[in-house]
Amino acid sequence: MPTNFTAGPVRVRVPATSANLGPGFDALGLALGLYDDLAAEVAPGGVRVTVTGQGAGELPDDDRHLVVRAMRAAFDVLGAQPAGLSVECVNRIPQARGLGSSSAAIVAGVLLARALVVDGERRLDGPAVLRLAAEIEGHPDNVAPCLLGGFTLAWSEATGARAVSLPVADGVRPTVFVPAERGLTAAARAALPATVPHGDAALTAGRAALLVHALTADPTLLLPATVDRLHQGYRAAGMPGTSALVKALRAADVAAVVSGAGPTVLALSEPPAGFPAGTDWEIWQLPIDVSGARVARGRLGHAERDPVAAGRKS
Image (cartoon, rainbow, N blue to C red):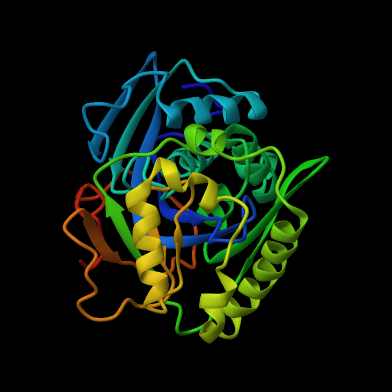
């Protein structure tokens, strides 16, 4: 094995995320306690990817896999491209549902590659990991909470993406309503207009500022703080079930929003007992992940290989 690669496998655990949180379009995100576990090691040649759980049998098993593409991008930055790779993915984050599955794959790939290169952490530090992951993803709102954990504010400058993570107040209790159907971020973005009325932009900016206060200090303000006029209304026609559930929850005084680009619905306060969501939704109560992505040496253990979604309550 070339001396610039570490011996043996490395593993990473990455959390699901919910972006936007209503008015914080492309800026705010929250890490959730639902995880993908991955392991990788350098191989003499070729690329082999095994997938268990979400996406098994449909995701690519070669260089086309998003984890491998992110790894290759990181190896390019590190100047150390291996001849081959062996990657194992145990996926619990639903694919294309608005819970950050692609961001989790990207963050995992970048961190796995960094861990496989001798002195990789010094050569690609935390801020550089965020910039690279955001460049691959196209925006930082999901990769930031996946990497840092907690409630994150992300933005882009000329030098790339930046983010901060803030502690979440007691009383914020996320529940996700996950439908069987999938959504596409590209299609959701295509539904957005090039411009919005100034009044809508002003209102949404004020509510985004209020949301930072509500999430970190006063959850009693979550319902007014999650009002949005930038994106959810424009996307409603493409996911009518999601829109109807958000409206029903908000009518019951629950701070509900579209999770990312949808179609999952995120409630930041607990729905009333027996809330009639219907049979089209899996309902999971998820803790807030405060640690973000975690890297370790060695292969996945028995617990990490369990494809059942750890930590969720239905």
